[in-house]
Amino acid sequence: MIEIIKQPWNWAVAGILSGLIVPALLLLGNKKLGVSSTFRDVCAMCVPSDVPFFNYDWKKGIWNMFFAMGLLLGGFLATQFLSYPHNIEVAEDTRTLLSTYGIDDFSQMMPSQLFGFENLFTFKGFIFFILGGFLVGFGTRYAGGCTSGHIIMGLSNLQIPSLIATCFFMIGGVFSANVLLPLIFKFL
View 1 (cartoon, helix red, strand yellow):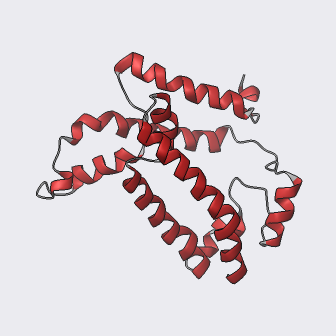
View 2 (cartoon, rainbow, N blue to C red):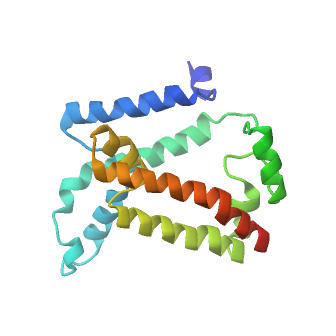
């Protein structure tokens, strides 16, 4: 059983299992899947209540905090005990393209040439860690939720705002992969 879990799964299996979580949560306790609202709950818990944005009953979102902690714990357990011992399989065309950007180490989930600790205090690290993180956080707040919340939960509930957000997530992803990243790698 452990060997089956350790193997890479087909994307369709993982997608179906993720999709089945939504009706299970709704049926079992009228819970909504999402992680980004947890950050607001944590801020509301820590920030004094005189800030109007954080002045609400954050205890109603306590379930999301347990969910987010479960994600962290699951990720830790998976990397420590269930990691796939082989190199990440990357399509040859993608390898060729990434090698033009100076990325040729596929031994880890995230390329060490980008996300290695030695890049943390460089200009490249500033672009990817600080600026990228800020833009993800800003986009999540601006869209009223993260990609998982809108795509998995919102689309399954036939929410029009989630459909609009998902379309813009896809447009932004295609634009970033084909226009922004080549420009960033050209000048870094």
